[in-house]
Length: 261
Length: 303
Image (cartoon, rainbow over the protein chains, first blue to last red):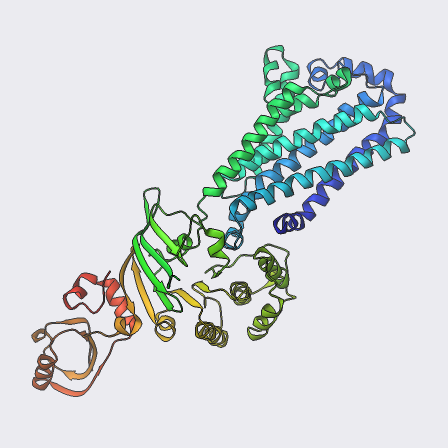
């Protein structure tokens, strides 16, 4: 518990900044919906005429004039990209920062096992992601209520749930990589998040690149699929869960035996 | 009850192809004040990191309190206080937060001990660690290492950054702890620290222990530091080392027969002479610069 508390305390500024930023952008987006709804005829034509771009964001399969359609594309992108970047950075820095900042010597000469260190840090990462998502979800629901729209609970919970899983997956994979690093992995974390995002766009555009959907967690966050099916894609989530588990297992395996120089 | 607090057998560490330490065999009995001497890169820190379980040895065994460092790491570390040569703390914390975190990681309440140590070392616990000078960071690390009253203290270049008054206070605390039964392992390249405080010492060179024993034995040698004013025939003497001739006289380390030295001096024109025991620093430097020559009149118990 000491390590979890310590990690949360150390990350509190970054956590507050990311949560505030994502929540603020999401709320602004929701408050724009009534205006967008009124201009839907012209906007709909515009989006329909953008070819591959329309397909890349799944706008060809969603009605932008409905709250769920609008929310899953606009708010989904904010939550998806922002959440992916935050969780990747959180995961990639968790273990490596101790060696980068030369605090590993302090931490690991105390009578705590490395297994406890890894577990405590992982728990802190997951806690921050969970709390951030909970805050954002509550603020999002409140903002929808404030603009006077009916809240589509099921769809919203599914969309937020999918992005929560995406963040967990990226955080766990980055956490595994973090165990191998001795310096900052911020570039790797952000690169991984961005690559996952763009892989999904490419997979949406081209039929021949559809297989890429199995590699990126953004695939199971597609609003069009979630709303159409009324559920999440279990197969893709299972693949993501395996990748996350591999990341966590790698972190334990590597860090427990790692030489701290 | 095992009487050796530190025991290593053929402890070896390679970083890939690079040598860290080789075949280090050390024994530090309970209550000893043990010095570990060597210049930068000799393997002192690698040895200490292996003893603390920060790195895994390539070969050999390290036991502390009779327990294996790899398998019983937590049990061992609960009895160890470690002062690193370079101190780094988490950003944004105050000194008291660092001390509290350290105590919590040990599962102990050390508030009173920390207060006393901060008082003695004149360390303000309310200061932010980011704003501390090198000396105050060192003091923070010292309190972290001492506040839980460990059975073994491992100190790596402990006085680096401390002013002379604080160094005196620090060694006073160490002597008190030593008198109370704490075993102290002091790694340093400041030989006077070892000579004045340690009972036993080991010298490490190129990753290997080249000499070990009591500091008295290490200092006790047939060699003498000879300083003369005047002239004499140095070539007539064997066993002269580090000869340094000045217009007024000469200074050298003499390892040969004393009668022969006196005879050569009697044949010269000597106005003044002093013959003294070389200090540990001189022996150490001699040992480092020309160990093979030193073997001809071995002053050390080589290992």
